[in-house]
Amino acid sequence: MTRIVLISGSLRHDSLNTMAIATIERMLTARPEPAAAVRLAIEELPYYHQSDDESGKRHEAVHAARHLVTASDAVLISTPSYNGLVSGVLKNALDWLSRPWGDSALTDKPVAMLSASTSARGAMEAQSGLRTVLERSGAVLIAAPQVALARADAIATEDGRFTEPATVAALEALVEALLAHLSPEPAAIHGISS
Ligand code: FNR
Image (tube, rainbow, N blue to C red; front, side, top):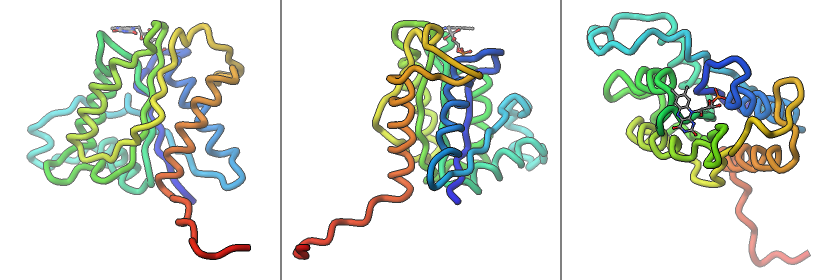
């Protein structure tokens, strides 16, 4: 079964990004061919410490997070914008995942991203910073569609998930793009007519 690691970049209760992740989690598990959706709890990671990294000191939470990602087929991240960039706790997690040097857990890992905020831009600006971090970490970014949930606090929800049809459709399109990247349709066979 396809395994997708889901990451919300916000720790806030009632986080809009966590709601986006919860919506996607339900989509993945409710498909006719369900995917396994596993959340990475980034708040459990210690502060990144380069001395620990270089000395090989083992942090169980870091080891578990790296294993979760390396054992997965893909990662999907929803980020808020904190002063134009991703949250510190998300950057901290990505820095851990990117190390040790030369052994990033994100190497060649397909990663899809979205953002959500109360603003009119939907935290789109944070996605450019996130893209830079992911590219340097060796991830393969799903370039389209770009999904930024603007004024997301006004979008209808139920049980902690978005229900407004246009939002659900946008999230579905992102999920489909990620899954299509993992299992491309077989190339059309030319020259055969029915
Ligand atoms: C914000 N917020 C914010 N929003 C935005 O669109 N652009 C920004 O630069 C910022 N900057 C910012 C800095 C800090 C420190 C905080 C705490 C908040 C607002 C933020 O995007 C909004 O609260 C979102 O709802 C946060 O995401 P979650 O927690 O709902 O997922």
